[in-house]
Image (cartoon, rainbow, N blue to C red):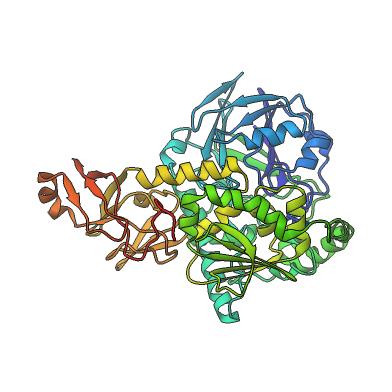
Length: 560
């Protein structure tokens, strides 16, 4: 198997049974905020333009480069589609001109004329743009897992396709937090350091669970070349910066006893045969100075890209639409359908677009002009970006505005995923899916497990990470290392976000008492009355639902 690394999450896999082009990204993304790092300008595009198969993991612009796919990739390619509940990715690829598709089933092996592939699909509203995925490839000699930036929770399903000879995994930041939040400088540093550590610790855990012979840090970080964003780059291995590069992570692996990490540069060719590999990097590709002299490297890169950045900014619309009336017409009908989402937000959101100040009231479920009401969340966004989203009917603002980092934010209290889920669900189809997902999640059965004298639900309330694998207990605090979320094991309260609750039971000593009466009624917590049925299954217990703390917001009813 031969793999040409294309930069970021992009790769061109060649085998005797055909080739697979994965996530090629060459154009600036998110309003020209993100650029591939290191630069992939030197790659000969003609060598990757005619793949047998095309795999796009998800619709984020640093993975789905519509212009590149439309202009450079043969439409004879057969697209391998992840198993997503909405066919948004297929529609987007058809708009690019592709007509040949194979729909995969989540985690199931698929034979392709000598190749065996599987796509592990994630479908929570928080997974990418409502869908993210990873790819396994087996040519009969070599097996690889291209995780890119997906965060799978069913590790056993992946391991079943192994053992793997190579693992490609994200390790660096890809979000706007905490840089865009208007926190005091000292708080910014503390939050940045925590997020940087969480990112690398999560990647390390995936690496340890997958157990591949070789590990290649990929899928980030991007770099920021616009003057307004240039300071976000990690020039000097700043431990409070959320965008550590490949060299930092390989050293992080080594510090934790793993010496199988290898850096790939755009244009590098990786040859793998079972658990042996070699890397060839063409002489025209810059080497270690990319990392050791990063500021100078990015300054040069910035100079080359400045015209593209300027052209992008010149294209933004100004004064083309009435923002308030447009958002009322667009968002009001969605809010009327968003019962669970509105309950989850449980507050007011202000869009501060300079002279336009728009209130999204999730209590009243309507959009209006702001009249000095107190708000729980504030987003300061340039009117041009909002106008762009209106004119292009952008259904996922996370994939345009928020990932661009071209905004400022304020919030009261902890992170609230429902706010961002709303902004990535701006169509009836998306809202209806999200509502179904949350309804099913609230009624989903929870499997209990024990550790260090605590009995709790096995799967994290946030994104269902397996806490028996990703949970760390320190005192009375449980940390899910998938995203760094923490829970108080005495009360079950989430210490990261107010709207989550970890189900807690008495230790196993109380099990006999509970199984004698399989119906347990919890105290009513204002619309949270539940009847719980438990069934002892060896060391595990299945519960229908669990009451959250007194101040939690019910996902089953809207607020007043």
